[in-house]
View: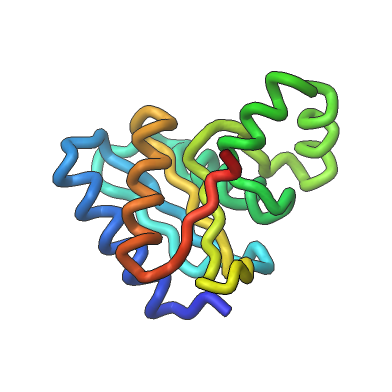
Length: 142
């Protein structure tokens, strides 16, 4: 189970990485393995719908069991499947990098981080940094 303390550690390290790298303001969504929200934080200056995008990245990763980088590749190769999957999960699936699964050392799925606000690659880099700093394993699906 992803604990609140772990989610808070991920959030703090993600924000520190983004600030240190000079990223644009981010929204960070952290879900547990059930897809329930543990944390949602929006830095000052984010645009209106960034939270929905961050949640879609994280929720899509948890729902499909793969990181959103893999979902992006899948969307390019099999767009009808990803369109159908998006519909099946209620529309909350954003198939671009920035949705990263959180696993423990044994590979057990604990949840996902979804980030939106900068480029998709930078969103993903911030998530990777936060997950690693919390002592957990990040899975982008790549």
